[in-house]
Image 1 (cartoon, rainbow, N blue to C red):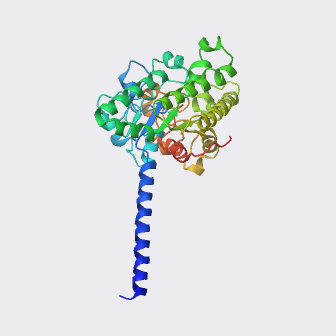
Image 2: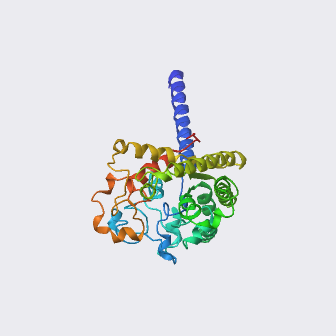
Length: 361
């Protein structure tokens, strides 16, 4: 074999080995960055069935909820189909539905690829959950501790640590603190001003405490969706006595102000907590755009919900007006007077999956 051929052969082998090494590194990086599970905390926007197993009136385990879910089953999700957390899971290559932690039918191996601790009626303020007999955020984090120990017992310490460290943590909570607590009942109003409640030791402070708590337990990748335009929910339009049918501008201002505090807190924690990636997701702007031009997103109605008359029904009231429920929920931004349709939840989920930086409102 000539020296020229030997040289060319060596170059080829070197290139082949270099390519193999590069492929191994790419495979390792891909495996290292893959999210093994989506772990969810929150309220009715993230409850995939936990309230079915506690003593509370806030349940969605009856028609017309779940009518577009697989098999048309009412699972406890407050929508016609899946929630944002479910679509986030699917978007990350995980199962298309996130199971509820309190469902006794789910073993720990099923929960290892995703779990929701959320409870309809819960809030950042534990008093909010107590008003509705829901699972408080504090209790949800205690359930996460139990979950972590179950993973260690069943899968071993290394596997459990990998799941906890690499999972995506989603907090979908906060609206009930305003609409079902401060703006409705006098418990907190007698103790603090609205500004203090939003940004002081209560809501933003409670959100920070929750993130720090899961961080201490091993969480690193956290997503914090902000509040939607609360004043533009169909129910809030209906009860807007000043200008019936229009958005309640004051409630929208409250949501924007809270979101600014939440975004600043997320930025600060990403800087202060080693290895943490705490990302604020601007749901307000997204849904404001959807509601302002629903046709651009494939919707026909963004003013009322699909269920009943669409103006005030939510929860059990939807089942009472089941005969009035619209034929095609995909044409509606909201399924009931408070909660998005599953098509709207998918749009929200896409924003959560692709959120990588903090952007101003």
